Image 1: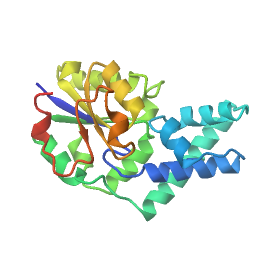
Image 2: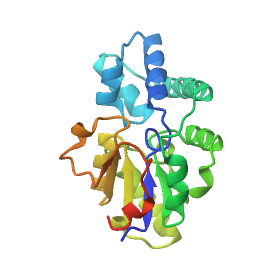
Image 3: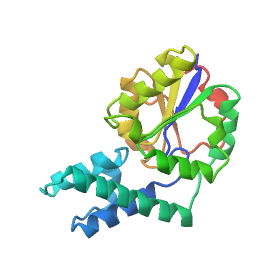
Length: 223
């Protein structure tokens, strides 16, 4: 029986993958590295910023120092926050689904976004008070598809009140997120906010929804 629901953030609660894509494209363009939208959704979606920049520099056969990496991550975060200040949308149904889920389950956020970005966006919505734990990119050494973030979320929940990993259900939008959740021993459903449903078939998702709209948290009870 499901006891907790763990939400990815970007593309699951907040419809902001396009802003992340644009911010990364613009920062890389300043470094004379081209990133197409197709490349972002195929290769970068679900990665944290540190891993994304390392990946981009490696593909461009460029050297990236630790100091430069820190600078790029900060620059991209600042640009992302500027973009979401102009246009911030929740994923369809999130405003209704999260309070519904909170009445039934323990809730958490498990994201590759920076904590400062998550806190800023939650501060602009009414969702923040529903989450018992938040695991951000700052909290783990390895990003999805490594299961570290979901294992950290289970540990954080378990410290407060015992819970089995298998009693946690994850909602994701990226393939690295799906792999991370399943490697942590958790059932994972997918939203098609970032990938078409046909590309998610046969990958072990517990369900595939186009959004959270029209769905009830009760649908997660027996996963």
